[in-house]
Amino acid sequence: MSQPPPTADELGRLLLPLADEIEAARAVPEGVLETVARSGALAAMVPAQYGGRPLSYQEYGELNRAVARTSASLQSLLTVHGMVCASLSRWAPERTRQRLLPRLASGELLGAFGLTEDSAGSDAQAIETTATPDNPAGAGAADAVWRLDGVKRWLSFGQVAHCFLVFAKHGDRSVGFLVRRDDPGVTVVPSRRTSGFRSAMLADLHLDGCRVPADRMVGRPGFGVAQVASGALSLGRLCVAYGSLGLAEACCDAMLGHTSSRKQFGGRLIDLQLVRGLVSDAVLDTEAARLLCEQAARAMDAQDDWLIHHVLTAKLAASRAADTAASAAAQLHGAAGLVDGGPVDRWVRDARVMQVIEGSTQLLQHLLAEESLQRFRVRRRHPRYPFAQGADRVE
Amino acid sequence: MTAVYEDEAVRSRVLEFLLRYVDDPAELEGMQLITGGVLSSLATVALVSHLEKEFGIEVDDDDLEIENFDTLDSIVQFVQGKQV
Image (cartoon, rainbow over all chains, first blue to last red; front, side):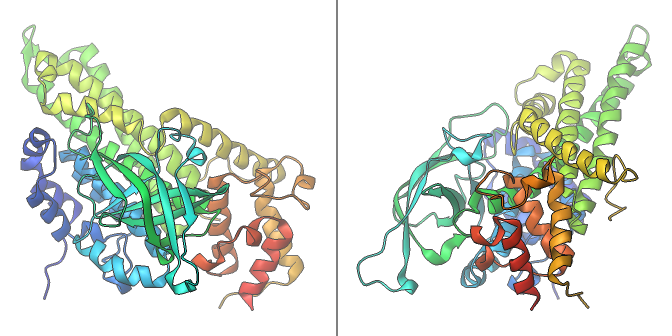
């Protein structure tokens, strides 16, 4: 009989001693990846019928939080692998689901997500990678092949991923494809070094006449970005929100530990009013982020009509909380917080990343304003409709 | 058991949902919602999710054709077809 999977906190405790090793290696060692795979975390977004061990979004969020307390880089694997698994489970042809999902669930295969390009960051519809039918004369539907050409940037865990969910344009319509690392025309190149997410093994994916069978199309032309990528990004944003929460929690604990033990001016640092201001602001933002994360996860579990709104607020608030808490931790640790590669330095650098990935703060503000306008229109027609609505009060 | 809605009921329920995206209801009549830019990517995700929950239907990968979701009429027709 197999062991039950570890809880989020058990996995967090298992990984915590490895934090410095992961950071120093600028990579996640294979043994750590095996530990994560054994925990079942990689199977969480795969339905049981394909070998998965599905978790609710609340449970998956907690896993992300616990892992990010050790390493935001490692947590980003749960983000992108989860996005790939969820997208395939929902929109890939049955044959492709059967062939790939059990291997993704076991961790035998790792998945990465390829949307960003030089021309397409916040404006995902601006992708220039092309998808073209490439069928020899007389080929039947079963032999249909597509040709992909373009370059995808900044794929988390791209250096070690075995397959990539990429998005391309067929005419003016976007479409998703699952590309395998061993497909002809695929080249993986490590991305330029980044200050944060040092160990996320970022890579650029070059597709040069890459030919993939039609049954690895995910979604249909016209729905690549509009449905597959955008749907996956809601999950990705929830993961980043919970990851930011874990990072913020770690910062709060570190600054509370440090300021309650360090003596200056004849007393504890924490007894100084200005220090208390920094600590309490960080704790306040972190606790508020937790409530919004939980609300967003509940909304996703309930498939609430306003789940996108809730996910946007959670990601915005939690990534800002991480930044606030990391800055406060750095300020209160003094010179010790500046040590290159130390935990405080790492949190500051990783918190910055959280406000960029899966939608920058400014893009999310733009989207949240749009969602708020939609709620306002409903309220205008139904005056008793609440201004804000928790996901536990689903209509 | 999932309720099966008549044409007009489906239409009014879909319309009620789509009204959150426009200031003037007339903008929805005969308008191309996706290709005409009324619905953003996120709105398209929300629409598909809403149809599944509201009408107890499942939208499969084969159903992801622009023609199924691009106008109010086509959405109503799609939901009706799924309910049969």
